[in-house]
Length: 68
Image 1 (cartoon, one colour):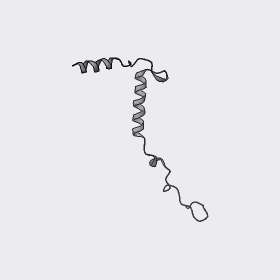
Image 2: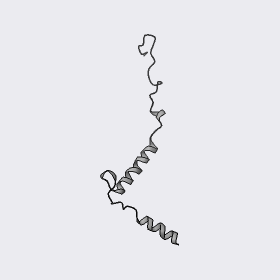
Image 3: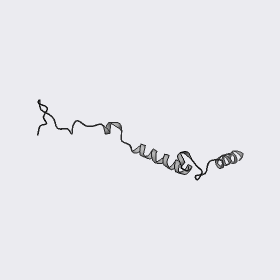
Image 4: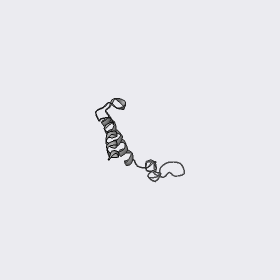
């Protein structure tokens, strides 16, 4: 029981969402920005997917001119 009361007391000591946070935003806004950045990082394609592909470029003949 005393452990539960201790955990509740520690939880009450945290900053409120409306308290000033880093960079001139509130603690709640900073948390929301961190969560949004994490979501964008999860959706980012791997670096190999962003590399240019040689398969889409037209092949060139011996003179270097593209074939049509």
